Length: 398
Image (cartoon, rainbow, N blue to C red; front, side, top):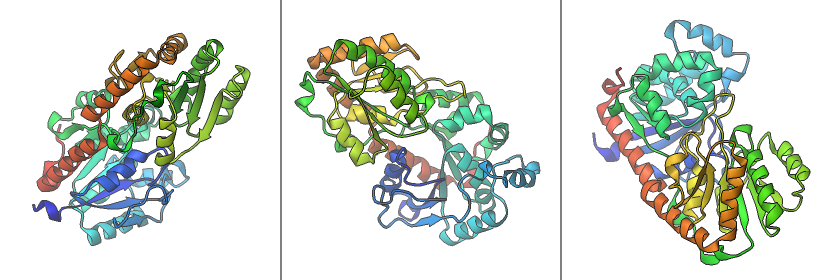
């Protein structure tokens, strides 16, 4: 197949989510195959423009499994074993769209989306690459038996599988996916777009946390650790970038710990705004936890973004985070829920500006070598081209 003529779909539930800059980077970075974006909604267009790439927005609910019609969908898919598969008008609309645009391969972001598209891709003989990230291989598997059953039955139907963490790779291997159909490709960060400058030697230290404000990101642990640092180093401060359902509780926690004026909340920020926040900071902190819901961190994109910006990191050993950090060289890895250990690591970096600078530069080099998003996107392109050339006959067999 002529690589220049290969066409593909990138399918996702909602395009342009503030918390998913990696998705936009893939969309604009993949040039072979020529992509069309297929989604159920497009947000923040001014921050995540798509230039001349075709965008098809489907006129159906983005998450039907959370609506009353989920039982209709489940009943109609009962004999097929994929309770997430699209049905009815949406299935016919997708088939018409696929017939018109004639993709050679479909890249589906998140397991739920891959299951939804699978019946149409199978009918139209378009090989499907399923790209897994976090919830779709952790808490959703635990909490949603319909999803778990559907995924386990459908895994052999995917032409290839992409995961972002070594623990996810192991899960797939343990469930019979052949190594040749499985690809470990973390999302990474565009290193050249981040400025690592020398002003980080300042003795007034700003810690920065960038994440969704949800329980499993452990922002409350980060705040408690910072409180111990702030009690001894009065010129330190903590900036929290992101938004979510825990924001009110986290603001209240900061107040109860006497951190008013020392902890600030920037809310949800675009990639450009977040990049500026990195440049104003000295140390990145994040304390993801293995949550009671079953959630496990897939890959912490903001961790490699911060390292690309020349920041040393203090983060938890959780899920796919470990390989992103060389302990004691690019930052510190802390056991989950170890508030004291996190505070001690933050204290060391706050008091040693030369160490911050050295770790920051080593972290940037580590990301450049292993997690630059341009290199990662090139790997993903190669997977899509190989799958397109192989066609549906090359689907996973276990």
